[in-house]
Structures are given as C-alpha cells and as structure tokens.
Image (tube, rainbow, N blue to C red; front, top):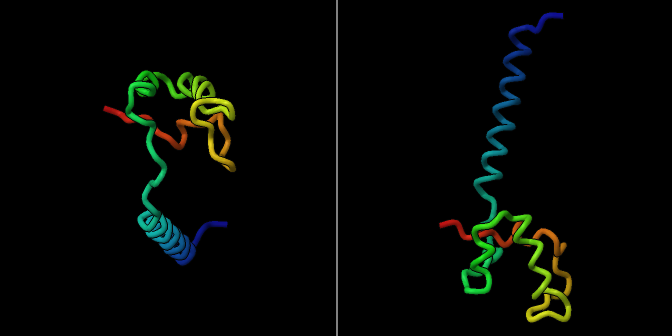
Length: 89
C-alpha cells in the first residue's frame, strides 16, 4: 500500500515534534555536578591511561579499610571514571 502525501506530512510533523521535544529536554538537562578525577600527585598517573586500566587501581585507596573509603550508598565501585572523568589537557 503506497504512502499518501497526507501520511508523509503527518509522519514528518510527528518526527519534527519528537526531535524538537528531545532537543528542549537535552538543553534543559542539569549541569554535570560530579567531581572530576582529582589533579593531585596521587591521581596524576590515572589521567592519561585507559579508563579501564585506571579503574583497576581505585580500590587500593577507596576500599572500606583504605585511605579514603567510599561513602555509604556510593554507586558501583567498578565504574569510577564513568562519573569521575579524567581531566583532558
């Protein structure tokens, strides 16, 4: 069954309304509030290496008995650099 010009117009209108709504939604998204990976001496070596490789070392200090344990209710501990992004220079 061939598509009529009315159907094409309707589909185009629905498509543009959807895209416009999506654009408005994305433009109104809140700013990123999660802290970036610290730029101190300890974390400097993790700024330039691969994310997966860097995340392997996070638990050394950020375990329950480590220097700086993660707070109660912290999201999954194996995706550190997903939220705490590396500072690109």
